[in-house]
Length: 490
Image (cartoon, rainbow, N blue to C red; front, top):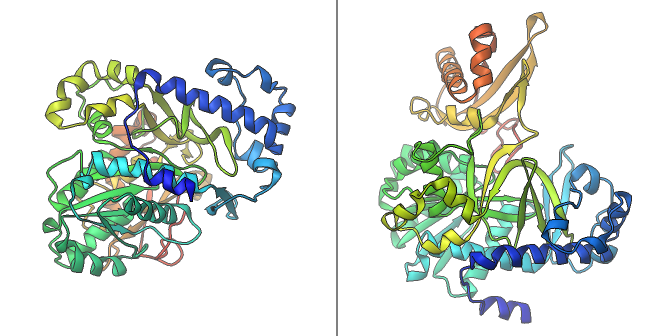
């Protein structure tokens, strides 16, 4: 009860960049030292790697602590050994994620993590959607509820924000277009604004279905919060065009997170302006990597301490099962405020007021995510990333025919060579055709040649050998794109 009262009365003040790093790194070092003493698995891991915990005193020495990951830590020790004092007792919630073998992995957590999530989400609602100004807001959670982390974390966060007086009304139809559309049709017109939370491909399908059914989506003052994967600026533009949005910085906000850590980063009007500046080539594209879409978020390092180590993002955070310098195999870069300003070459400061961005956001660091190291498909030694393929399905000539969901794989073709195969989900009532398959393949090739220099060079030599085979799949096919749940497709 005391923790709940402290949460309700918490003053959500902005950070001071001058002391934020010192405060956050100090918390990370303190967590390391506690875990080294009181988490049996971590104590054994450090001993096995010859680490003397007493010598880790500051951020500089902390940067030399060996990384942990699923293979060298999660899979080597029991769940109890990875928890404080060797027991799961004290956990107040359990989330699950699908492991690489298909068997679920479990992540116990404290209620404090939900408090932290709610406070950060409240900051998003204030800085981006101005919910605190009294606009009664319909909050529609389309994530699947149950044991999977995203739906329940958003659900708990909304309820906790209500306790702090945020004027929101919660509806939770889950991962279902047919359950969500009636809620929007009946209730969205009655609210000052409606915020729909969900997986980005699902949000795209939801809006497409609403348009097909002639719902007046442009009259509903819709906003969106996505999570589960990054979104490109062409995707954001597509959503804006569908709902008639005129503010590119405050209509679609995406969350960076994982089952292990829940929320890790979040888009803000500042991060979106920075990203769109890169995409529109008004800033030096020093963080854009060939063949990859970069996704830019901000984060609170006092809650989740993020570092970039040899191109990977590693995270330190407390929980029932604390994780110290944990590598989830996301490739990226952490940019502290001084680095962001240097990359922007004065653009951020000069345009902040015109863009209506809260200057206090400049105090928060950014994290640039380029994707996961372990999901690329290798074809003729060329790494092909799903971000590029999803960008292709956002082409204006395809959005009326496909949902944007796809499965990527490699098959052995005749003659022993490999071929890239794309299973692409059709929109409802769209029939498959050889003409549509061929057109999708052409758009994909054009996108890969424009985004991936390795593919472009190889295509000049190999030509159509690199063309993908596109197989069109019916909407919500039970084996590949089942209704009501997400499935790892890459």
